[in-house]
Amino acid sequence: MSNYIQVIRDRYLKVVAATLDGSIYEDPPLPSSGATVYDANLRTHGWDWPSRAFTMVGSKRLENVRKLMESVIGERVPGDFVETGVWRGGASIMARAVLEAYCVKDRRVYACDSFEGLPPPDPEKYPADSGSTFHAYPELSVSIEAVKTNFAKFDLLDEQVVFVKGWFRDTMPTLPCKQVAVLRLDGDMYESTMDPLIHLYDRIPKGGWVIVDDYNVVPAAKKAVNDFLEGRGIAVNMTEIDGVGVFFRVP
Image (cartoon, rainbow, N blue to C red; front, side, top):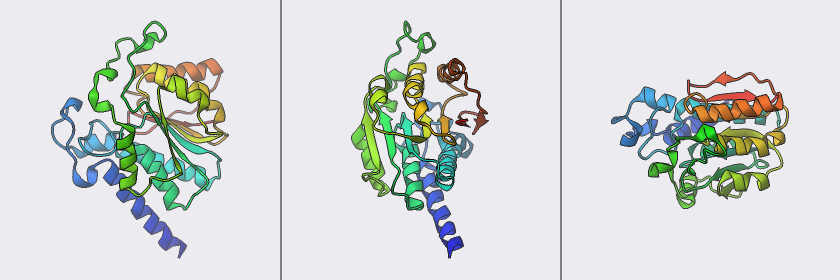
């Protein structure tokens, strides 16, 4: 019976993932992402921006969310899932789907975003963000109402999902989450990556995980992570996901 349950669980999560990234219906990309037609390889690695799908992180990074959530559940690492930068909600929906599949009721998913796009850079305070143009892309602004609707489409909008609206500099210090089992950073800027690390890293227990979505493609985000770890004297084993994102376990 347990094997049968695991098979059904695996099928459910695979279908959820394929729906979230748009691969199940070959969702074409937004022209602003530089691609014009659906390409399975681009979607696998999250190298395009889907036109209708629920996430741009790609299949491999969605699978990473699943595996790390399964890891903390199986190893009983306490804490919630926190994502900083959710776009249409796909990765957070994946995390909530894992909790659903394993009948976990004592963990929450925190979906943190401005829900208004990215902030303009502050080069005087954060020189690494100088020249950032992410705030100029209207495609990156998705309302909180739209993200809630996306959760509801998967029947996963409930009290286990907490939406935190605002700039991270304002919301991270008071985030109502005592422990973070999986922290997923997707801020695309130095400031938006550093703020969650400063305020949330110490809430991650031993065995918890940190995912950095754009470590290999956004130099400012990579610098923020490296500066934080070096400043704290923390040595980690950084693991590649798909050539874009990385993750590491809190030592």
